[in-house]
Image 1 (tube, rainbow, N blue to C red):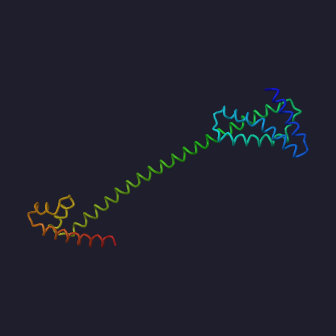
Image 2: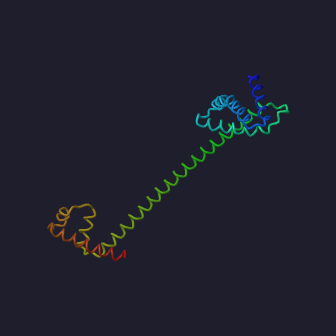
Image 3: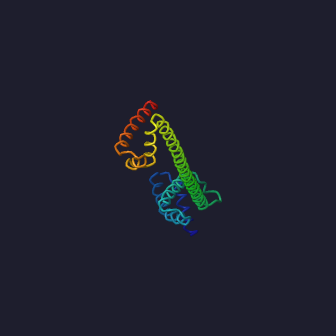
Length: 196
């Protein structure tokens, strides 16, 4: 393994010393062919998914390419150490981004859950208020009816059928139907006048 890195470091130095862009391209392709499989294995060992590994490998290769122009090979720090630092940095950046993305995703979900519950409760409250208002309007509309019509309307609102109302009040069905019709007309007139 150490022999491979010594050979790779020689390729790095040749890349840095080369003045021909064609020669640099060829050397960098050799570097990529040598490093890329190792990067895949390294990132895979960190538990990173394949589609993310491809992006990380590309970013790492770009960083290596940029570093090759300025790295000082005369120091005691081997380029292998620098490569390991780049890989570690890329791994940490990746997990940091993943954590932020997951945290943001969870936050967005929580926001939608809260909004949904708030909308549900406000709709429920609104529905209750509307029902209460309608009941009050309906109750106030009963005041315009005669006592007999009010009795018929109250029984009708209590889910009695017209024939049951007729039996309850001891009158003919036709009288109940006529009374219901008068109730509808009077109540409609009262409600329209009240609303407009």
